[in-house]
Length: 151
Image 1 (cartoon, one colour):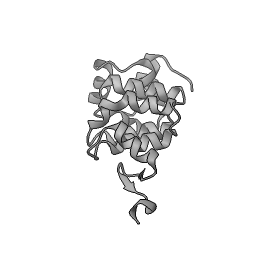
Image 2 (cartoon, rainbow, N blue to C red; image 1 turned 30 degrees about the horizontal axis):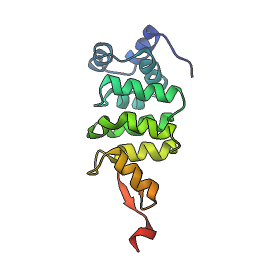
Image 3 (cartoon, rainbow, N blue to C red; image 1 turned 90 degrees about the horizontal axis):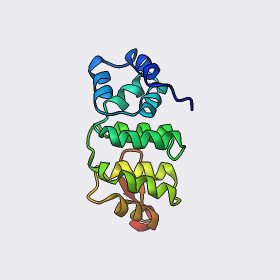
Image 4 (tube, rainbow, N blue to C red; image 1 turned 90 degrees about the vertical axis):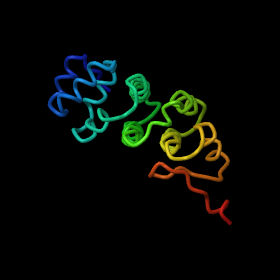
């Protein structure tokens, strides 16, 4: 992945985003890497990333993980897309990234991470339920009981 300099990224993003979104990216501490990653997305996806309710620090961690291939660009988009509704999971971003480093498949971890916004548990508890085989993360930011557990 090519990392642009800050000026190149902002120039490209200014063609896709509203002025207030650009202002947010400039004033809230988004890193050069975050801006470059956002600029790589198509307009609709860049808009969703810019509209994320996560702090700039969390977005910086997530985009850095994307550049390092810890998570995919699909994971990043999925996580950011659900953050416009709730960011309860933001507390667990380090646990989420650490779990991938410890062997949890990135897509499973990302779906579980988004589910924490809507489930009454921490990320560690949620990923524990998934690892146990009793639950699986869905596409829609929730955990669902497996057939084996239900019967």
